[in-house]
Picture 1 (cartoon, rainbow, N blue to C red):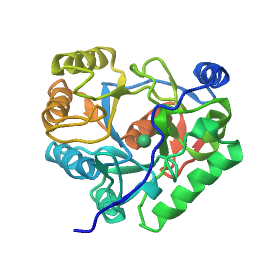
Picture 2 (picture 1 turned 60 degrees about the vertical axis):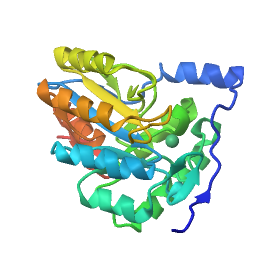
Picture 3 (picture 1 turned 180 degrees about the vertical axis):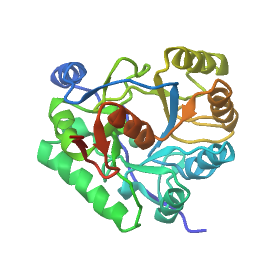
Picture 4 (picture 1 turned 45 degrees about the horizontal axis):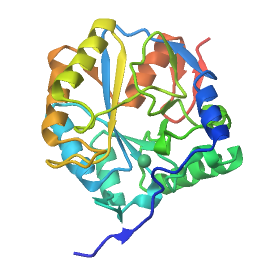
Length: 275
Ligand SMILES: [Zn+2]
């Protein structure tokens, strides 16, 4: 089999004080707030970068439970490799979309967004969109996940123009007033949480009728430190279903939120206030 061409991703870069302050302040700038009005809890499962085992194992475990997930694609990564990961091919991405999974944006080159000007951020988003459009991915691209969780005031402000929802790596439940441009999310990593701790989070979401978003990278029996074992992934899906939570893609959950707040929702970015 042909070997995947390596690509370099910038993990663990040091942040300047100004960048840290920018990130901190960004949490308090909330350009699109929606009230959470769910009849019952929602749990979403999302995948970043899409290692090929997430596209196979992660998608399969969701499909076996009759539900779908959100896959955040940086097109430049497709079929390339980084460390232990080989990323899903464009064909795998198209197959995921055909099976009803959400394909979301993760910038074109997996850019550290906070370092980009507004114009360059938009260019990354548009380039990724153009690349995904060639796959004829239908109804894609209403949501975004910031690579490295990196976002500042400028990029968050700009995101309103592009997306209905943006997922961050700011941990916690989405409850009360929801910041649609910086949705909170919990890493579903075996090395961070035990199955019992994950169950407790799902219990809390159900009790509060809140929105719990999980994210991960690889899904395999021996996961990386940023990945999930098939066993933990399957038990998390089963627990959410057992407790009666709806498992929805981020796009589908966003649609529910927008409509409950009196907006029409188009999967393609936009929404309009209903008259
Ligand atoms: Zn990423």
